Length: 173
Image 1 (spheres, helix red, strand yellow):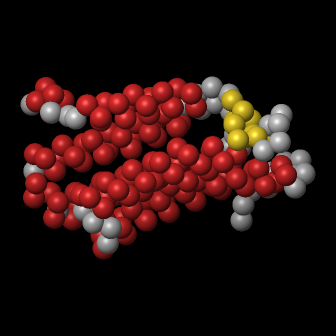
Image 2 (tube, helix red, strand yellow; image 1 turned 120 degrees about the vertical axis):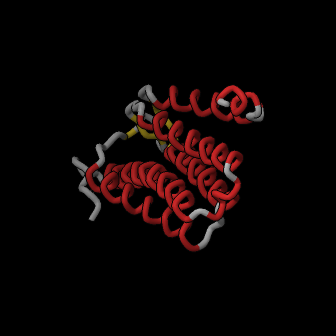
């Protein structure tokens, strides 16, 4: 059955996986980037998640509530207790970002959750109406999106403090 699933996966899905692996590998190294580029992957992952939720379960009721709950559960701790991973860049408008394997792990988590949900619904079409399936998938997407958004918010907060000249960025309240 696994070979059947993989062989029926559209080729563009493998291209997306390759791109995400490439971006995740790039994020594992220290680099200097424009501040606005820090937003790209979190926004792409947010759009992919919401698009998938909308297509599979709809963006209302339990699916939306489960996604929001997942975002809230992950966002707050990452924002409040996450490590500062940026520093002032050498050029104006840039920041120095410490490399991390976390973006790769999160992108793979979003990709494989999306893939597994698609397989689940292809094998069991009635799962579209299953509250437990919808809730579980949507909470997972929310958790992953919450970590991405929390890291981004933390970076923007740190950048604002760096711009204000704070020696050690204060934790957001």
